[in-house]
Length: 211
Image (cartoon, rainbow, N blue to C red; front, side, top):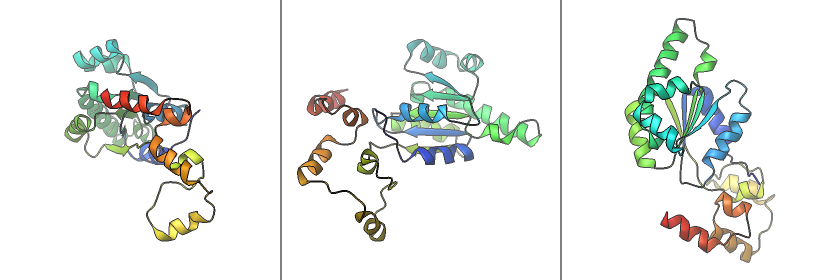
């Protein structure tokens, strides 16, 4: 069962404004699934999915980034970019070349923005490489676990801590018993737990924290 994240629209907006989009956040929050779903509906780019979890692809990306981009031409969705931070410099060069080509009139501006979608789980390591290589060229979005509104599919959109906005929502929000409220809090919003209600929550979080 796939549950839509409200951040999807933000990702698409960033993709229309930046050559590179980075979706970061904890593991198991659904970053890869979300981007792959959005990629299937992208009207401009037909992008290849490259996972750096694959040890052979990761080795190529680390040892020879130039050959990596000869083998995998953009547009690309590169998963777990923190495993090969050397790719960021080559992405920067690709973006700058595309921008220059657009200035010369030989490159479609629509093809530049959104050319590279990246995911990264190790926030500090990922951000260090991004800040050094892609400043001004990248839109960064942090994906959290699912909100109650997303789980219930209420259509309210992202939570806004504004009393007026909350009053608007209160009239149409469904009633949730106290026991269910605490169950939802204790289970959290991890997609794998929401999609598989029979999964043992304590074992999942124990394994998650250990790894």
